[in-house]
Image (cartoon, rainbow, N blue to C red; front, top):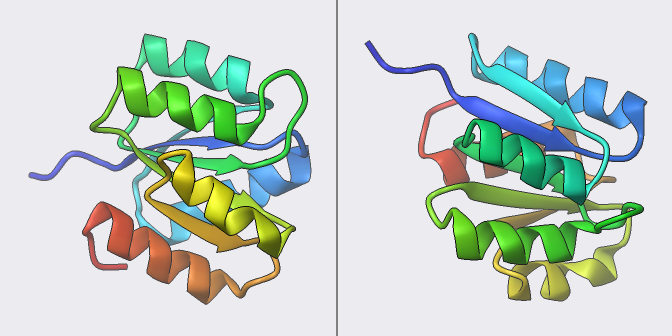
Length: 124
């Protein structure tokens, strides 16, 4: 039996976190999902229980997604990271920080699911 996908969703907007959680749950039942409001909280949660995947906003208070991704990449290279942003011009910087993928928040849910499938290597 395959272990459920473990996902950490990081966004400073509660509605965005809940929407991403619902999308992940629909594609990867029974995904184990945790949530954080910023990069600092994400790092703390990863220290407690290393997830398979982190879905993280680029721009957040305290510690943004770019800084958090660099830290994750150094400390937990096995963890996959998809950075999300409302700003298309964030893609190059997101990928340079070590993210496995970048998704524009204005894209369709299908585009995000396709990216999730490609990054985690599981069929959606």
